[in-house]
Image 1 (cartoon, rainbow, N blue to C red):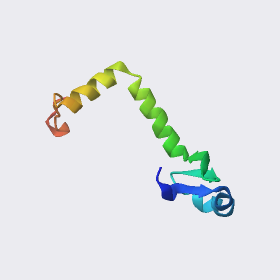
Image 2 (image 1 turned 90 degrees about the horizontal axis):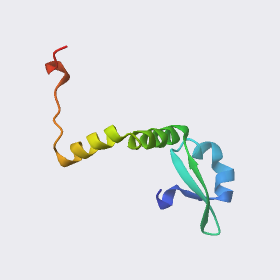
Image 3 (image 1 turned 135 degrees about the vertical axis):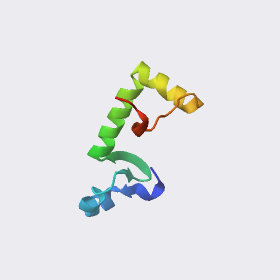
Image 4 (image 1 turned 60 degrees about the vertical axis):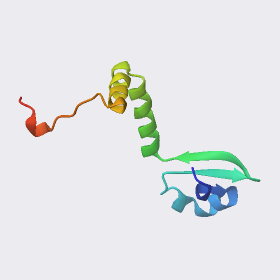
Amino acid sequence: MSKDSTVTVSQAQAQLPKLLKKDSFTISRHGKVIGVYLSRDRIEALIETMELLGDPSFVKALKEYRSGKMKFVDMEDVKW
């Protein structure tokens, strides 16, 4: 999270409805982070990523993609 997404406790109390529209932000007190807010969408995305990375077949496919070994086919060319 960037520096501009960190707010103080006082700012968080005063601007909570506006802040909750953000994807994420941190709350600090005396210059130290004391809390983190992640939106529901962000948390669901993190969970999905963890689930995918826990699947050995997905990890294998991801490695193949990154190495350039994976080939893609246009769906229009697939014969059903």
